[in-house]
Amino acid sequence: MSDKSLLSAPARRRLLTGSATALAAAGLGGFSRLAQASGAAPSGPAPKALPAYVGWKDANALIIHSSSTIETKRSAFGAGLITPVQKLYVRNNLPAPAPTILEQREDWSLTLEGVKSPRALTLRELKSLGSETLPMVLQCSGNGRGFFPTKPAGTPWQVGAAGCVVWTGVPLRTVVEALGGVLDGMRFITGTGGEQLPAGIDPLSIMVERSLPLKALGDAMLAWELNGEPITLAHGGPLRLVFPGYTGVNQIKYVKRVAFTAEETQAKIMSHGYRISPPGGKADPAQPSVLEMGVKSWINTPLPEQGELRAGRHQIQGVAFGGTEGIRSVEVSIDGGKTWKQARFTGPELGKFAWRQFALAVDLPAGSHALVSRAVDKAGRVQPEQRIENLSGYNNNSWSDHGVTVTVAAA
Image 1: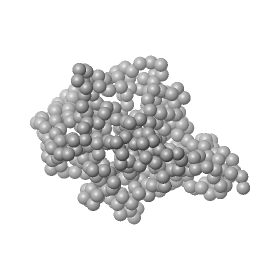
Image 2 (image 1 turned 90 degrees about the vertical axis):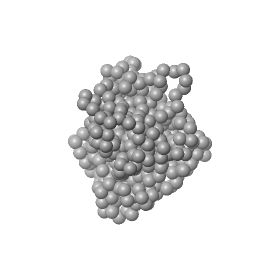
Image 3 (image 1 turned 60 degrees about the horizontal axis):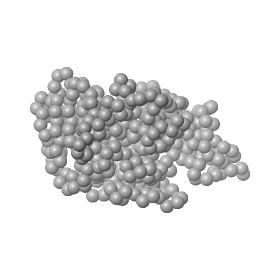
Image 4 (image 1 turned 120 degrees about the vertical axis):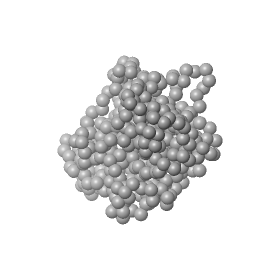
């Protein structure tokens, strides 16, 4: 099934109370209209052909870096709050399993360990435990890597390895409670993906398996729908382990195992991959792991590729999010951060894990203008001016890196 629609009627009925109230207050009948408010497809040369497994996506809205790394163009985010799946970025660490795993979704089996009554549960059984709907930002750990002057190895993402999406599934804590609770002494939630591993290779060297601190259990979800439709293969269907507020590598696709463990997994993607390593150094398990996202914002309009602007009144618009905290405020500067003005929020608040839309009306005279935004989350953390330099270009939330420069024509 393709991700043609955005939220089905049953999915809308399952919205959490807070999200539904925010939508109603904003006069928005459903996420479908909200997501369809995105702007027109950007003009330019014909896009690269999409790989077959994502052939249903909107190629005009995407930058195709490779068959497994596909980015949303900044100009394609538009004015919609929810990112349509057709425009959502793709990042896969391993080739996806065979499409046949989607033919019998309800029979997909998940093994749970480290609980008092360990067992395997099918997707059908998971659905019987209840469901909730969760809006959140999904962002690759390397989003913003393209702004590092050191040009780290890896995809040179700018802002488009991110999106605000809606997951539907069962809270992991509900499943754990049904199985008697977590065993004493367990400190991590370890999720294992269901990708097919090549024969003759040590599984730990290649498998997608990540361990998160036990505190993440409070918001974690086992999701089977994305924006109101069954999750496609490209985005981890039939079942994905979701940790709101954490970077994309921790959102385990095709999840086959969830284990509560005393120690982190020894899988290389955890022990040495996705570590904040110093430039010129080597990854080490003692270094900080890429886990929670930091406070971040960027501007989506106006953009330099739109050509010269006319002098006069313009609306600067963008998005901001705070990882595990909601956003308190956003400031905008038209002079590269020398002076700031408070922006206003323009869309509903869909919970602390979703991003907020902001806007500021400004008068732009003729000349060149460096537009930047700076967000503050509800815990008081301020988006930093500078990135944290690191070997692999992770966690870039620098406001100076994410700015745009536009030219205003003389009258």
